[in-house]
Image (tube, rainbow, N blue to C red):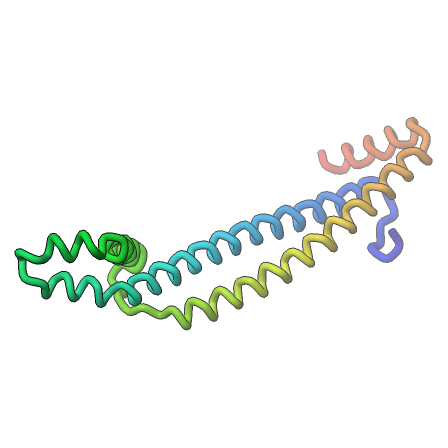
Length: 160
């Protein structure tokens, strides 16, 4: 309490509220980072499928019309994966048609490092909040109820 210049119960409650807010903001930031990681990984997977099965699609287009059906039947899986990847990339890349799997992988690595840092920060905040709540409970038990009411009425008078 002395380290944070806390001398009243209301200051302790205010500090605790700020700590909880930082905890939830960090938690929200983690969720956003995880969502970005998932999106980039899916983009990488689809780009790899697109590149891997592109030759099957080209060969299908170059096959004579009478033999296309046989070719499509023989390489159904590869052509389906290519088509799915092409649709996904068109939908998610928009006008930017250049595939950048190396850049996306670097971004995933950066986001993963950021997520790990945020998790460490969140664990630390969780411990601080738990400690502050314990202190608050101990202080509330040590202060007689009449003095707690006086403390609340002082803060109530000030806020008016």
